[in-house]
Length: 100
Image 1 (spheres, rainbow, N blue to C red):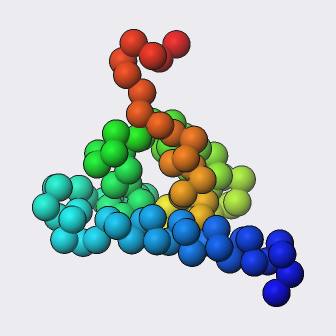
Image 2: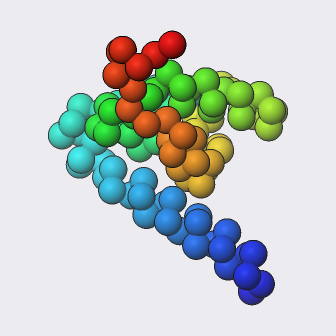
């Protein structure tokens, strides 16, 4: 395995591990539910950590259109943990007064 492949493998494992903290039990206890485009596991950073869900939704839709994904199903799962991890990493919590 080359250094580049090893780094991408580590990134995928780290992303999967991060989302694995949102177990079905944790999500149910917090009342987090998914919908037809977001599963609860990939949406959890918004209600549970205060992530900027509006920005994340915009970024995911832009990614889905660019990647020509089937948007009639859960696009977050089609994108995968690494893409979702990178999206949420760019969507920290926003206070009402912080918005332009």
